Image 1: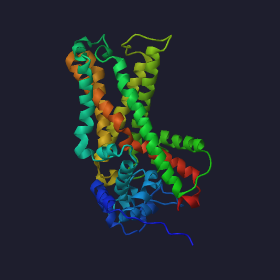
Image 2 (image 1 turned 135 degrees about the horizontal axis):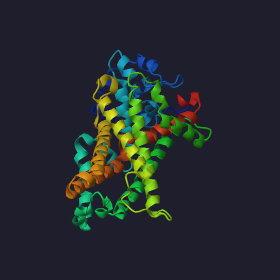
Image 3 (image 1 turned 120 degrees about the horizontal axis):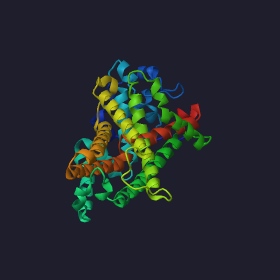
Image 4 (image 1 turned 120 degrees about the vertical axis):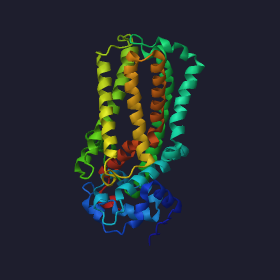
Length: 377
């Protein structure tokens, strides 16, 4: 006879779930309306009915390794139609926040971002203060006046200084993402065996991510698809622009002089990426101020990432124009602010809502590699 698995409810989990907007889970009486109306919920492993029970009991470990938590896009078809106003979409969002914190490496960073409603001055202020102290230590503020229409930002902040900060941060973020992703992958694997090619599953999942195909199945919050779509590709365009910029500036035989003219293809690609970020960010912000029942409750975990993205977009646009129209000192201080919020965005990537990209992609790969019967265990 098989030994029954231990079920260990967590009162602390239930307390945190309530604090993060999931208090409505207590209203659920398992009518299964949520699972029946969700177009994303597979027949062989429907959600979020089961996840609502796990949340009510405070079964944090089971939820941490449950791929369905991430297959949910919080389109809120379930919340709109729930007869008890249990708001399953909000509950799933709260569970995702707790899961990101639980899997975070180091854990204190996950806690800081999860509690961004009160910790945001630290999360934003420390990166800005870092840049101020770094620039002051090297006497760079003396070069503020050198910035202008014909002199790029490197006269104030040399490129090597930027690389000396963001390269180590990129390595740190990659390590953290890999570590947290591996923990999540192992937790899912403990629930269901997998077969087939990870690469093949990842390729198919990335196609869905690139097109946001699953969002097309949503009803109540379908417009969010395009906000997320343009925001994703704005980030991708910015990353590609940065990679090409390094090649154009430093790799022979290119090594073009800076600042690059506005008509340069690198500038055009970067500006198009900025437009995509502006459109995506504005779209999501406008969607966020609409009817809460259709967009879901606004939580610190949800809003912090969006507001930092909007800050990066706004400061970036002002910096781009400021070099031509503002006094050098004013434009330079805007550039310091921009560097700070960008650093904040990068450092918090694995702990903020951007972590959806990692966990959701892995959940989609797991879904493709798991057999239907095993996926419901």
